[in-house]
Image (cartoon, rainbow, N blue to C red; front, side, top):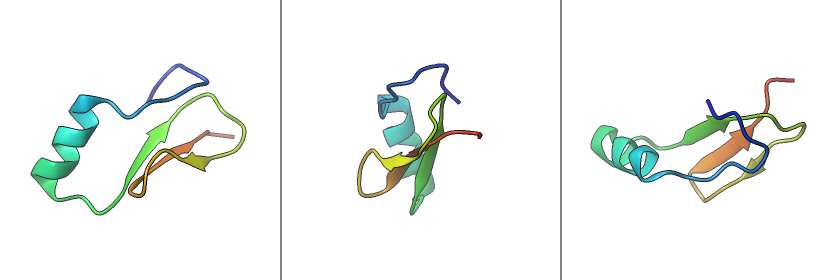
Length: 47
């Protein structure tokens, strides 16, 4: 969860997704509409 309106994929997220072989990831942040940050990671708001 990020307290930002302009989320970014962090190195920690990349490493944890590689280590766990995750197929998809989500960054929860203060935005109204979700959008893709990469092929595997989406930014999404709680509203």
